[in-house]
Image (cartoon, rainbow, N blue to C red; front, side):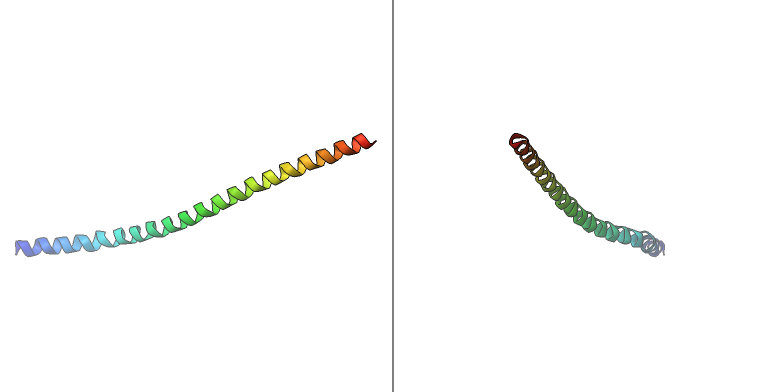
Length: 74
């Protein structure tokens, strides 16, 4: 009878503790996928911002060059 009681206690413990552990593991797995997705998006945004800054720098140089040529023509 004592051993049967121990098994019942163990099954009861797994029932009470196991379900939250499974749910927590599932949620962590889902969050990991979302975090990886967000990480990829952030990397893409960063590279686009770098490209934009380089393009703006080139445009500024071109505008300065045009301004200097206009000043020389005057």
